[in-house]
Length: 159
Image (tube, rainbow, N blue to C red; front, top):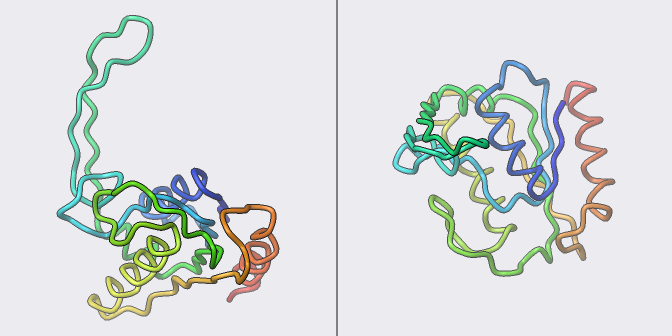
């Protein structure tokens, strides 16, 4: 099982699509960026390959980084019990993100859940990704924790 809130939710959305075979389920809380199943957008915001040069470590020598996501990871993840938990009031405008429609974490969450389930449907599978919107809560991990705990318990119990 995997849980992450905010930046941890961003990590969780990427991990579930890169390593779905390692998980029984996940809860993603209020992520600001998701790994969308969009082959026109480069990883980590989409499923298109990315090649970059980074300057890392004390030597600052250039290092080539290549990530080649497999859209089957998104398909496998869509069959897992994944719950996205976000507050109804998590509506602070965010900067534009590649592959993301809207401008708030709430809108991004809705888009990812819909995209994941539509991907499954297009492949004649049933998506298991769901959205839980908590009334009266903004970007607050502590206030979203009960909904996240419930979703984790449901996934462990088999849905």
